[in-house]
Image (cartoon, rainbow, N blue to C red):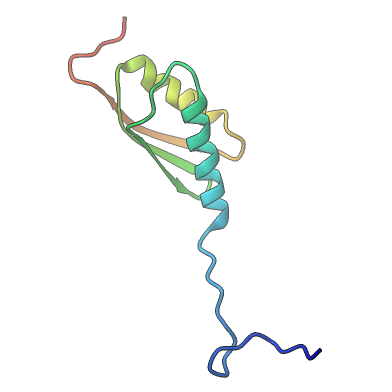
Length: 94
């Protein structure tokens, strides 16, 4: 058996890896939000920059906004949270 280095048209293939740590952290945050009680995060988006998390979207009320931030801050690897989640129109904290 002869071992040959992988090549395509006589050049070595380029392997593109785009921020795998970011994707991993984004997945952990999204999973935490999806499984946390006290929040419906189905309309919340998570964006990762380094170890900083940006949250955006809509939830039912102000309690869910606070709960989302609490959950995200508890995820290992998160150092900062920018919370831009808004509450549904007409909702209020009781």
